[in-house]
Length: 338
Image (cartoon, rainbow, N blue to C red; front, side, top):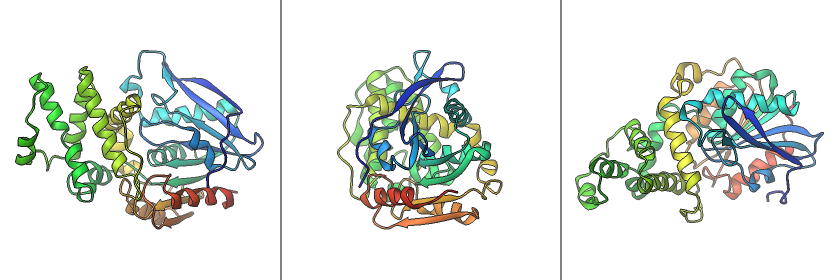
């Protein structure tokens, strides 16, 4: 079970870069082992549940919303996509560490949070005591094609994929300047089914930045519905339109970063971790994770000398899957990073 609900001991907003302010909070024992929770997404944020994986008597828990996410804000109207890069996010973490006076901390990341944790460890290894990763994701071409192109996760969730790949219908609505579109005819023709992941994401990006509020809302919900539907072995509560800000943030940031981020696109640089494999790494991976399949976690484990891989049967990607929740809590309770 998760630890009981806990309130932050302190929290604040930290100015980073030229236009961004990130929200942070601290829970648990101020003299405990420093650990930072790195949420997924891109574009999500922390929640009350995020605090409850940690024994508050053991850890000094730091949580933050990445730039452009959750309670973090821009001094402009919104976060500019040009300000949204993996390197900027890594630098934000380092600013937060310095602000809190922490010499070194444990990195606990899930999904996109594993990407950010690995990137931070590569740039600032001397400030990392160890890494605990759930649902390893490195944004490689193979991983992105699995998730956002016909032939991967779409083979397991074909109905949900049909709805996700219908983004091209919304794009054509935008081009035509009309709300009338013949959905059934497009489905019959089977158009776009062999479209690359880049084409799908480019279409989402165009619609999400179109200025047409209803089309933007439809695209954001379609993106969120696809990821939500493949998260859990047991299934998650039905997705609603209540949090459209979060839905749009996740879709927009994901498409922008996966298509344009220089660090993520440089796979040769990005996929080598020989310089930091001395750091202790524990990977907790759902055996039936559809979002970030086991293969990526296994390959990282093979390449990383000082690592352990825990395969959790009966679990998918969602940290709320009971077996995965318990495995993460047990790992945090028992594993020493010294």
